[in-house]
Length: 327
Image 1 (cartoon, rainbow, N blue to C red):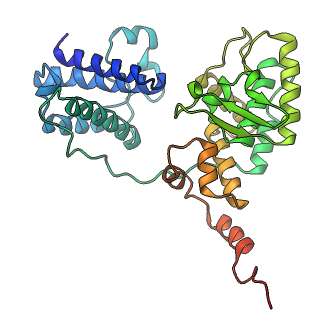
Image 2 (cartoon, one colour):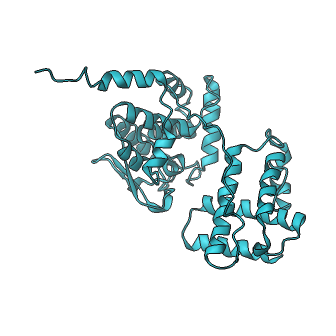
Image 3 (tube, rainbow, N blue to C red):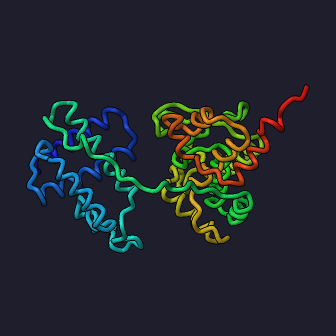
């Protein structure tokens, strides 16, 4: 190991001490281990302080040229994960993914520079790559109803997944938050769910709200679940463990495939919640709080994709002249 590997260790320890989410820390570590290996192999860099701006720019160019999963930070992972068997192995890395890497790298070097581990900052002038804005995916009422008919409610896991889909659609929760809720987090009287700080992306407590119709669906599910499984998790596996995000995503894709909706993704359900909230006159500030975004700006950027028909309908509802009180 070289000093740069210890520099990465130091940064990861710092992130852990700040109580960042496991997902965030894993993303940082994966990005930085690959970068460190590249710098050692191509520029004989021994410590983070040896890194030049040119090195980072060349690494970004390298990321744009190499394919997905063709490079790993730990060779042993190939034995376990067999990346070459993936359908997208070797395909071009998206600009969005590369920008995520750039953000991670900038956070790392900014931390080292601000804490005087390095004397010059090689990422001071590094910027993200400009890319076309990805349109947010939505699912219409007709397709959502088709999706609900794809679940076999006689099976425990499909009944569970059926309720999860409706709960995200009704509350706007993230999938990871939904799968982590426990029965004690639910208040059926006030129809609220407490999302504890340890399960939210922003590491802050947050409340979401559900409808009377959802209350009935949720009560029936919990009553059914408690007859067969002893688990604090509302949406547990057959063994009573918390269901993993990637497992649910795979399941949902399978259900969608049954009714011709193979591109379905849990986040589309969250997007629909946001779209409906805005279309029915909800304000962006309240929506931002419900969704758990770090700022209103994040919400604004995420949901600028109301199509022409959405805008037309909303205009007719709020037209100043149509709603003018005549004297």
